[in-house]
Length: 108
Image (tube, rainbow, N blue to C red):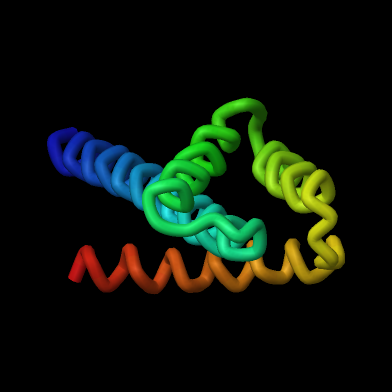
């Protein structure tokens, strides 16, 4: 029974690490996304960092990533920034890949 318990604990630990990694990747993606949107909004420096933190926080409103999209889309539209929804969603996907790469490299 000990071998089974050891495997179960190992599986639980792996699941926990995987969840933590997924959270870090999503938070990093949202920060990178916030910085990208800030650039389009003409925001830089500390203000861009603050905006990126707002984007990260937006992800805690509802499950999924629509809350993040809605926040940045509203901000872009309110400033009359001419970006298509497709372009914004494509950037979200590209930055997810970049965030994963960064987090994996940090863990190495």
